[in-house]
Image 1 (cartoon, rainbow, N blue to C red):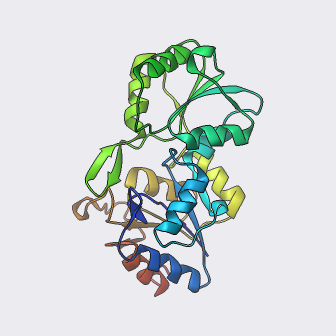
Image 2: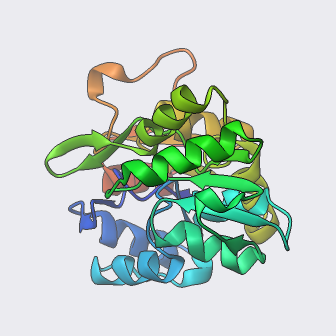
Length: 253
């Protein structure tokens, strides 16, 4: 069975492993199951994600990681141009797709936007002008918040909102819970046995899109008093370790 795990709020918080999560991933593998990591965090490169997982005590290869940056790049045609507003993961994904990364003021075919911890007003203004001028507006994801050990910080959705308001254009969204990332996961890994995440609006809806049971953990965005009952997740765990034990014990049967 394939387990698809979100990263932020499930495996770690801003790169710091959530207690018990590395051991839970090891138990999943020891039980003979496969693991893939699917994240809406488009900022890091795939290699950086894999390196961070290993530093957190989780055995992971780059080909087991899918990001919303890759999903966004998959929506563009090789040989076109795009401005990248976000971290190096966006530029890497575009380059691997064969899309030339250019300045937003140079007339790009598309503007691809993700979470950007460092924002430049002039760059955002140029990106907004490019979108108003006809460049395709692609969002890696629209997560409003980003969970950290110090609480929730603004996510990619905050940057997307800025450009949506300033350009008057709604973006095409690529990451969870949208079709582009679902296609990437299906093509690379095949059917999904369970999708584990901490957000109902992204991970829960993504599980429904890929026709997989949704496992909700309470170590990220969703609080215990926010667990829905209609539809209810297939399984809820206080953390990934508890959820893993429940699934391996047969709670989904």
